[in-house]
Image 1 (cartoon, helix red, strand yellow):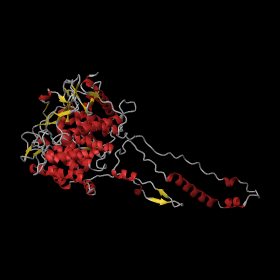
Image 2 (tube, helix red, strand yellow):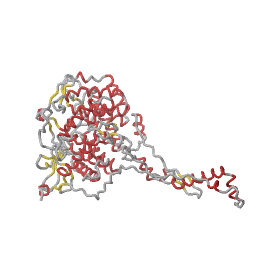
Image 3 (cartoon, rainbow, N blue to C red):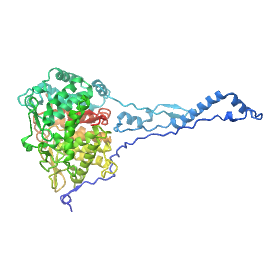
Image 4 (tube, rainbow, N blue to C red):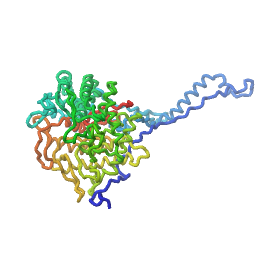
Length: 610
């Protein structure tokens, strides 16, 4: 009996009989119609001196043009009758939308949407309908799409929640984050007046929700009132600034094409570049935006967390694509080159790396804090440039990680809860961060995009199944909580296979609703919308401050939890965005056209070779 079996846990083995649909095939499909041979003219072969030829033969010889026209139309009608009434499946290339819009699903399942004409026998002939893909290119498009969905009360409710959160932030306009209980603020750089971190993080959410007034006010701030980043004399997290500020500006530009957003993205990236000047090229954790001074964090033992230096690639690579300056891409690609050189045999990377010596500082592995988004970006680096040769190496490395997860970390308790454990280098640690819940959606997203090659031992369907089961576990931490909200960490009981709360706080985090959103897009199962709605109602009940804003809570294990007086910027950037998209039709941020960064900022997919 293995150690896992002896304590009531077994390594997860996924059945192929799951109710989750098979991943959609990416192969091209179509109808081949062979070329018809040309018609010969047998009339000219008859002997012109034959006196015994019948009348119809002589008629055909005298009226060749008329006969040719008649034959042409008969042939055309025959071809239409044979092939014109058959709807040919669409040819699907690698960038075709895998997530059918609600409109497309309705067209496929409702014959009343197909216009009909009658043939000579008064029978209907179905004429294939070319489905027009809905594209939203401006904030006006997003507003119109919202307005036309006026009966969608859940979509409206989440949008109203964003407006309430933003109303609170407006009380401290231009500061970084809002304290909704005391009406105070928190700025990221000590001694500064802030740069408007919350509104930067939330601009793309405003666009997607069609919030024209909030967007206009924020745009004016960025253009006219935002301080230059070079004026900020203080240390700031390279990682957080990359995913929130650089990612936020890039997404805002991709959604609106407003030039100031790209200018600001370049400005902040140039201020982060000095952090890469280490002995290895691994960026330091903190940089002074004015002086370029850099350092690691003492609590990390002067090493750099995996999730920080491994979560800059999407943003810097997209910036290179938009500016034509490949130096940004080169810096983050060098980081990945170092990771390829130092990859463990099982594809599971320890959580800290020394930027000068190039050595791992620990053997601890987690998909939670300090590890999480590195693995997310292995998949998304492939998705961002899917279809290019250079992107393939990220797919291959991601698959090595998937195998490591299935072999060592993916467990199922004796009560049937699937989860991704941590690992101390010797054995699993049965602790799960709220942050780790992102990985449920990650597994499903990779499976749905057919990340597995034919000879890979873990199928795409198995990955989707695993994502579905882990999503259920994360949701249950909310459903079984007295407050209706899940904790910051939870632990599995080795005796009975159940879970209990660890750190009991809730910081308005998005990871569970993120995976619920992805599972809905992948499966179309309405239960995920119900789960998301239940979580939203709990947030409304426990976190909403009536005068404006939302606060995290300190103890989810009580029906009336105290507030922590902090509205995180990611609540507007991520949590509310994922909940809103969950209740939108699939043409709002279609996942074959956008890759969503770890701060929920959508970046456009391209086939750029990097």
